[in-house]
Length: 410
Image 1 (cartoon, rainbow, N blue to C red):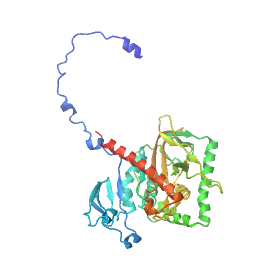
Image 2: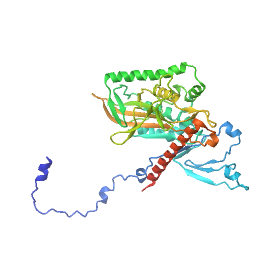
Image 3: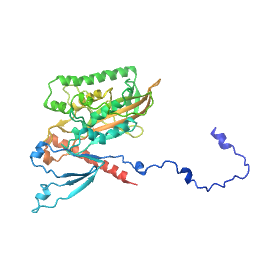
Image 4: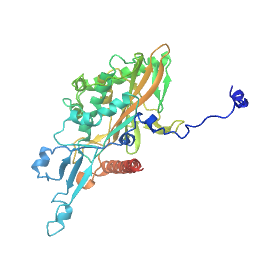
């Protein structure tokens, strides 16, 4: 067809009138919408600052109260405490030097968990439900309140439980509960045979049984502390059922939700949902791979289909019990690894043979805090962990700076 069109030559029928070739076309396009320049330059990297309140111990020990000042909803001013090392070395007190920093938004010590979630992550959850991909991570020094913000106690849920609740509230009545479509690699999926579906269902039941067994057993001090901080399944139920989005999708579209949970400990990747036999303390080391498009993914990481926010929260609790924690001078239960909880959403056209329309992912990372060994007094294994944590956060800082420079480029 293409060849015949190119081969044929139209016959000339005489001169062509082109009197209007210089006509002003501005009026023809004046009614078209003009894209806002602010939209086209919208930031991809958003940074939120949460200032935690002083603990009772910090207040009683006379910690400086005037180091952080909220100047505006997006700006803070930092001052070095008068008791800092530079002032101690000087005979005369030096004037306090102030530094100003600007963020996407700043949350003061009085800001609750709900306000922080709605002002930061809630919009990203909607983007993921609509087909986008998003990475959220808590970043800061040790004992800054990252895990509290990430998980929260039972009566005051953090970013992860609230994200799960909003996702499942939004897709209520549109859940694809069949286990025949499973995410694979980075943005791919596989169709499971009946035998594979049975194996997935059995594996999931065995995994969830681990939480019941641990709840019945006598908990150690570490587990008891974890249970108190993570709360029970009711922590996701405590979030308002009205907290959801109205999604504009076809009536036949369903959502299949899968989760994974891993950690990076001493530069090694471990699957926190791996069932390690009793007596074996070492978890399998996973490796990063790339798909045909060059996208990175964790090879052999386990994905579990969840049919409710409560079920997803139980999977998270199982993984959290397997994460690497230790006590340091600054934190009774310090995270010694970076944990990554991923929520992958398959949009399925559930007519006839189900068809995957798209795959999106929300990755929530609770990073370990950077440490000064002079303050933590770490030695031995704790010191090695701190070195790996600090070096990995330094690499992450360089990535963030590169993204910032890229955003500012014309």
